[in-house]
Amino acid sequence: MLVGSRHVAFTNFHRLVAEVRPEIDAALARVFDSGVFVLGEEGLAFERELASVCGVEHAIGVASGTDAIEIALRALDIGPGDEVITQANTCVPTVAAIVRAGASPVLCDVNSVTGTMSPESLASAVSPKSRGVIPVHLYGQCADMQGISEVARAHALRIVEDSAQALGALGSGRAAGGHGAFGAFSFYPTKNLGALGDAGAIVCSDFDLAVRVRRLRQYGQIGTGECVLRGVNSRLDELQAAILRARLPGLRANNDRRRRIAAEYDAALAGTAAAPLGRLSDSVHVFHLYVVRTGRRDVFVDELHRRGVETRIHYPLPVHGHPAFRSLGGRSVSLQNAERLSREVVSLPLYPELTDAEVEYVANAARAAANLN
Ligand SMILES: *Cc1c(COP(=O)(O)O)cnc(C)c1O
Image 1: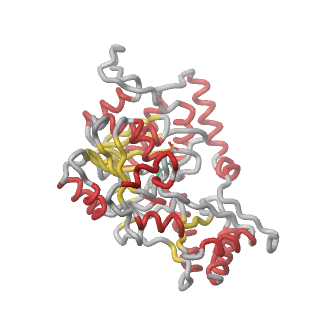
Image 2: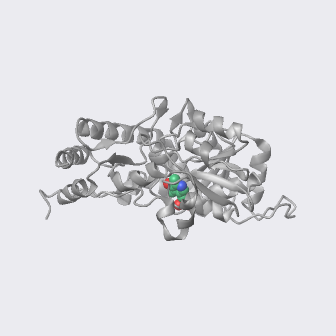
Image 3: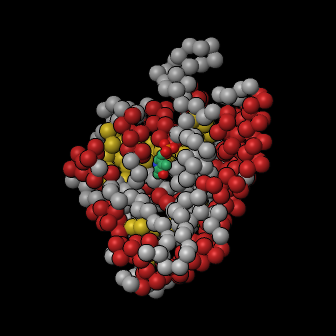
C-alpha cells in the first residue's frame, strides 16, 4: 500500500530524452544525411570532445564499457598467464572483461568507509603473475589513486581505471580516467553520459597505446587493411556518437545537479542510522549513484517502497557471490568489507531530471525510513 499518491521511479529515460529531444533529432538527421554510419566524422569529433573533458590526449570510441576494459588490457599486452586485480564489489562486467582478454581475475577488498579499492588489500593480492590492476571509481567517486598508484609502481602493475560511473569526477585534482595507463568509460543509458543504446570509450595520453587501441578495435587492421594485431570488432557507431555529442554539453550541469540532490539527501539523513557512503576529501564526486548504508536494510527499503520510492541495490552480491565466479573467493585475501557492503548498501533515486518536489519527497521518505532503524 502506498502512502500518498507519489511514485518516484529509480530511472526515467522518457524525461532524459525529452530534455534534449531537438538536439538528438538534429544529430540523427545529420548522420542520416551524411550516409556514413561507422567510423566517420561524428565519432572523431566525439573522441576529441571526450579527451578534452577528461584532460587526456586521446580518446577512442568502442562499442561498450566492457569492451573498453578488454581492449585496454589487450593493448597493454595483458592476457593468458597474467593476473589482473580488481575489487570484489564491482559490477560483473569489470571481471568479465578481464576474462575476455584471456587473463585471470583476482579480487581484493575495499575501504570499509568509501567502498573503493583498498591499496593495502591490493598489495596483499599481488602475486608474481600480477600484471594489471583495475580500480573502479565506484558510484561516481574516484578511488584512492595515490595509494593505488604507489602499490602499482612498486609491483610494476599497469592501471586501467574502470571509470564507467565517473565521467567528470576528479580525484587528487585529476579527472577520472586520467590517472592510469588507460581509463575505460561506458555510455550505457543509465550512466552520467548515456547513449541511447550501447557505447563506450578508452582514454589515454600515450600516442603509441592510442594507436594500438585504434587497431585492436577494428580487427587489428592498419590503413592498408593488413592485420598487424589480433583484434576484435568493437566500434562506436555514428548514430550513438552523434547522440553523445548532443548530450555532452549538458554533462557539467547534470553532474552539478546530481551533487545538489546528493547534498539534500545528505542533510536529510544526517544524524540517522542510515549514513551515505564515505567520501574522500580531495575528490569531486559525480554521484552516478547515491548509496546509503544501513544495518537494517530490509526495514529501510520496505518503508521507502511503502512511500512509493523505488530503490535498487548496487550490488547485492560481491563478484565471488555469483555462481560463475565463486572460485575467485578462495584466495587468502580477505574480502570482508566488500561482503559486508553487499548486505548493507541501498541506492536512492538520483538523476538530474528529478523535480525539486520529488527530491524533497525522497529526502523526507529516506529520513523517515532511517528513523525506523
Ligand atoms: C556499466 C559498467 C560497466 C560496463 O559497461 P557496459 O557499457 O555495460 O559494458 C563496467 N564497469 C562498471 C563499474 C559499470 O558501471
